[in-house]
Length: 129
Image 1 (cartoon, rainbow, N blue to C red):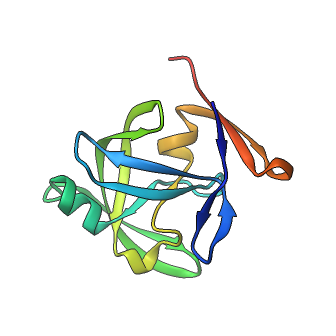
Image 2 (cartoon, rainbow, N blue to C red):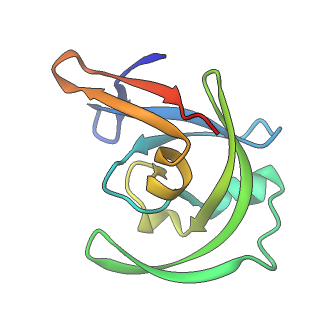
Image 3 (tube, rainbow, N blue to C red):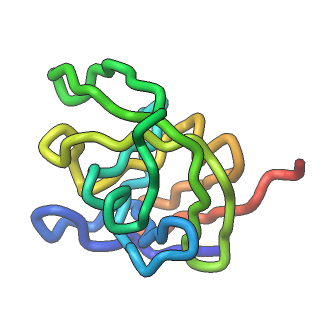
């Protein structure tokens, strides 16, 4: 699947996907970030989607030169025609740029991504199980 870069932040085009959590109507635009280890989303998305974070694994992470605390749990994600289940860290939205980040462990592990920056697009293909 070929995906055009989307407007993120200051109306800059970036590799991003509009994702949904589980079967909820909660949607957020997340940066496809090959330099990030984790997928991070703001707390409000978990709250609105009904994701229980009471027993979530709490971890301290470094991002953007600051230390943040994230609560990790496994959730179902959907973007375009793609569906997968992965561990996501939920944190204060001040701690993550671009609303959300799709990283190595929870996105690139499941999909092969080819960036075509010269054409303002990227390809996403599911990896074989």
